[in-house]
Structure formats: C-alpha cells, structure tokens
Length: 531
Image 1 (cartoon, rainbow, N blue to C red):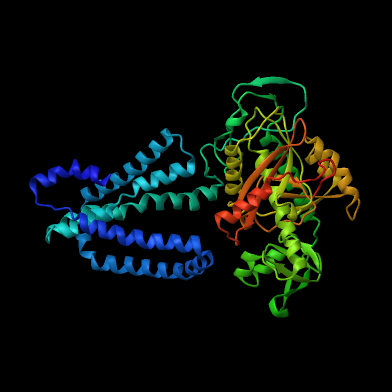
Image 2 (image 1 turned 90 degrees about the vertical axis):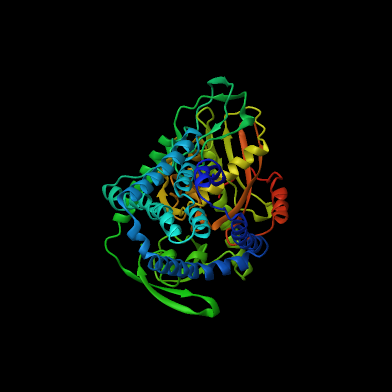
C-alpha cells in the first residue's frame, strides 16, 4: 500500500514540496533485513539442531536488546512528546482502530477462519510507521523532520493500546466472571456418530469438514465424497462426547474423594550416570510429571513416558507407593527402553488419529470408531479402524492432506493424556452408543488385574479405550502424514498414518520414504485388535 499512497495522497506533498523518496536507501534497508532472514531459514532447514541452540541463545539477547532500544529510544526522543496535542493523538487512535476494524471486516467478508481473521486485523492495524518515519527523517531538514515525524510516532504509540486493553479485559475481567472468549468463530460441533443401519438416502454433495471444537480444523471439503450413499445419523457427536465427559469427570471426582488424607511417599529418581534424587511426594496424587517438575524444566519437556519400579508408566498417572522412577525421552540408549518408548508413541498417535477422524465429517456421514491394533513399529504406520456409512468411497490425496492438517493442528494444542481406570459397568455406560466398544469392554475387563477394570484416556474432549501407556502430551508429536485409507469391508475403513516425535527432524526425501512405506496395508485382524 505504500507505493499506492505515495502516488495518490503523496502527490499533494510532491506538488508543494521538494521531497525525494530515497528508494536506494529503502532497498538497502530491505536487503539488510531479507539476507539475515534467508540465512536463518537455511540454518533451520539444513542444520535444525544448530538452529535450536541458536534460538535458545538469541531469545534472551533479543529481549535485552528490545528493552535497551525502547528505553534509550524513548529517552533520546522525549522532546517529541511535547509536540503531541489532542488532535494528533485522536487522529492516531482513529487510524489504528480503523485499521483493526477494516482488516477484521474484510477477513470476515472473505470467510476467513478466526485465527486468520485476527491475524489480518492486527497486521492491518499495525501500520508500517517505520517506513514513514524513515522517509521523513532522511528527506527533510530539521526541524521539519521532527515536526512531521510526530504523527507516525503517535500512531506507533497508540497501536498496542487497544490490544493491551483487550488482553487485560480478557485476562483480568472476563476470566474472573467465568466468561470464555471463543477462539474460533466457526466452532460449531460437527454432528457425527455411530448409528443403526437401515435408512438410506443419496447425498448429492457430502463435502464439508467442520471443526469439532476450537482445537479442531476449520471448514474443509472432501471433494471425493460427492454422490456417495450415506445413512442419516441419529446422535450428534457433541452430545456423545458431552455425555462421556460428564461420566468421566464424575467418576474421576468419585475416585479422588476416596483418598481420605494425603500420605507421603518417597520416590527415588534415577537419572544419568546412576544419579539418584529422593523426592517426597503425595501418595496416590503425585505423578511422574509432578516429580519432573521438581527436578528441572529440560527433563520435564523431554520426558515422554516414565518407568516406575521397572514398569512402563504414564507421566500423568498417580504413583501409589514408594518407588524408583526413571523418565524416558524419545532417544534412549537402552534398546529395551527404546522399544517401549516407540510403542508408546505409536499407540498415542493411533489414539489421536481416532480423535481426529471421529470429528472430521459433517452430519451426513456417521463415524463409529472400531479399534486400533497393538503398536507395531515395524509396520511403518499407526492405524485406526473406523466404520463409515459410505459406499465405494475412494479418498483422494487432498482428503489425506486435510486429515493430516487436522491432526497436526490438534497435536499442537498441547493436550495431556489423562488416564482413568474404571469399572466395566462405567465403561459400558460411557460407550453405550458404540456397538464395537460395548462388545470389546467385557473381553478387556476379564484380562485386567481385578477382572472388572477398563482403562480409558481423555485427550481434549475425546475419550477412548486403551490399555496404555500414552505419551505425556500431544505436543510431543511433530511432523505427521496420513498415508492411506484402505477399505477392509463394506463399511470398515483402515486409516493409516506416520509421524515423527517433535524433537526429531529429517529432510523431505527421508520423510517421503517413510510415507511410501506407511501406505502399505498394515496387517491385523480388526475383530481381535486392541491396544
């Protein structure tokens, strides 16, 4: 927009003054910005570990430099505040507010998602005052340069004020009264569910993917679902998930109330080089994650799963008694531990895939989660078998990319895996809408230590059955791809994907090899699989 304003409104200035726009200086300044950015991108692409180290070192330095620039910049130009008057401040405020309003309105008219609309509004409101100040400084003599710079300086001062007021309002006022600010203007729950067979109708346009909640992706289309025969679902997925969450929370509270009083236990953490640290924690309440919080932040971020008295253990699962504790990351040196960590990662990815697929389709298509097989790293893919009321659906590459984008967006929300062991009767009530789960629960319960227990996990608002353990958080999943969707029978589809841990980076060619391997149909019997 700068050339546009220069050639329109700027003509009034050029007609009466002798301003020469320093294009060469601007190009030099732009080059000074672009070249370091390109170097940074190349380092990130070619040497990701070096980039991570540099990022850790540069963040505090950047903070110090910004503080120094702001403090000394204000002090050196303090005299300019004397030139500000009511009309200048009012004009600057209106310009900023109109910029936010114009950008947000244009984004809404163009049906942009809430995060994109917010970004467009902010970027439009934050006027590029730096260019205006630069041109005025290098083209005008003093004191004209200072006098004319007052207006863009006032705009720069007023720009963050509305954002700061909104932030304070959200953090300090709305949250106090329990009012939530929606993150997604389109966050209507997509109604999909497991349904009874029988009622048929032809859908001429079964296309749109809708978000399940503010963590799910926004409004995509499955073009390959045109003219596909579907069955009208009877239950909305938001109702199903809401009921499951209610049962989960009620049972979790009941179990917490059974703890009469807090008792202390000793947890002996075994770290590198057989270093031992004894922690005094709360019996039945404290988790390996809480223990890691007492040790150091780096260990907390890297820990994927724990080992309690030699048993693989969820990071967010309560410790019941005195024990020895090991915290495992994604690159253990011990081969046995590496196998356990890999299986835990693969199992967690299957669980997350089920969460995404269950909420991916619009209400014309019912989705009923069947199960996912035990983690098999050698297969090259994580898997979830799903019943869809579709006939002859052949997913396109675009469909696979859309589901992968949903998966990637969801895992970045940093959801923890919350474990809960429940009685089989509670599990049956929780999954009474899913015929597959209802059939599996009694068989699973008989294999538990009590003969009646079933383990369920909650991630966000999604709940599913798994014997576990799971990784600590969804944010530990990095690059991912949905490699294939295979049709197993008339309505059962096998979704297959591949993913890397967030701390492991490989180039595009190497990842494409993993994708190619993951496209092969993973062999397992959908009737007996469970993990």
